[in-house]
Length: 585
Image 1 (cartoon, rainbow, N blue to C red):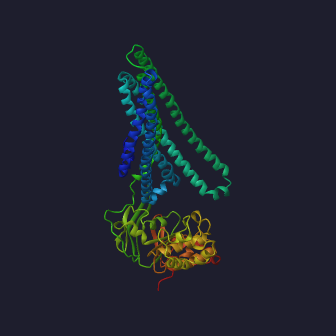
Image 2: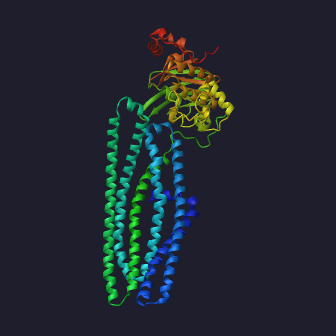
Image 3: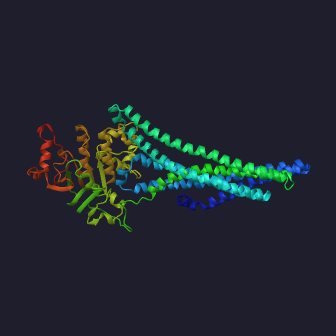
């Protein structure tokens, strides 16, 4: 009930339309109840008393009643539909907005398909609960109230008999509802797993086909699908059982009423019109009770989905702004790590890092895979928060400023370039209104302008999902143009050329040289050939800084850097050195 009331609280901003919907529901239910009440005068005055005047009047009244009922039904459906759709739109926005607030650790732990399933599948089921089911339940309740009033007016004793049987019809609704909600939650979890599976398999088709694993993936999918089928059948069994149980209870009620009511007519204490009017009200009353049972199934399924939706909406981000956080303002680019440590779940990734980076420095970070290189500099834009210590930009603790002002000051180019399924123009000027002069200048500096013009629609060419219509080098240069267009004073290059062939790497390196001018640059590199001319090289091993200096200094020391260098350059002149970053005078 608390969960359901929470959903209904989302309708408060639209209370006027909700009140109108309820008024028209009440009027519609009143029209239904009046149609049951009309059975008595139709039978008694027309068929038994043979009143010709009523014969001409009653059909007109019936037609007018049904016209009024149709109008009320349309208006209540429109207003409740409007409220329901607005509520669901608000919930979907809130879910997506809160998902965007989460740190990268949330997305590391939660499969992409599961998040997609929450926004698409779960909210769709909540939609059914909030709009369709609410309308149906309220309509049925108003109808039940109206018909009970008619029944009491006709035969209060028979109505009391019906009420003795009524609790037996409520029990199955509650009992089956609990079971359906539990099954519904399991179904939503399996749908999320299936969505995750589909996302992984479809985006990984290159690997699937390269390893001829189509049959293997087919079997995996069939297994997941079969488990979902069994859960769906469990829900079908519960639903199928609830209907005949309700029918049986209704049948018993009708049988008792026929016996007692018929006896009252035979002994002259009631009229046939009264009995048939009461029977009409009872049968019409039974229908909304039956529908309540059906709608309860949908409500329970929607509530199960709502649990998963609110799980994300209620989740507090580990990376949050302080109340009253200030703006970072104009940034020079000085970065300081003071005794910084970072733990991810139960594993210590970084330990007691102390590092100062000056304005316009070109700093390279090297080390074995898993040493903590990327994690260290993911802390600067607060993709994660340090477990201990602090990081300062221009002497200001990054936790004291807004996330927006901090991240506006940082540009990022990674090995795995993310381009959106949009035009090249929109990808370069991501999220802002493009300024053509600045955009063209960024493209030229990234050595991307020439190849863009050769594309079918130039800057208006849609790049495809993740930029699939472009080569690796082209995607990387678009990413560099995006960083140039952002014009941030701090630049992080995370393995920006490691996946490129030699020719593409040469082209991208020239673009990176332009990008690095006048910026504090941090290069996370695996290939030492790309960072030999960096101002300073930081060597990280097992989450700690173990060496620091320029290339010439480190190569003279017997340490991890020298071993990495010898390992990569043991074939000597066969490897061509492509330096990145110019040494300061």
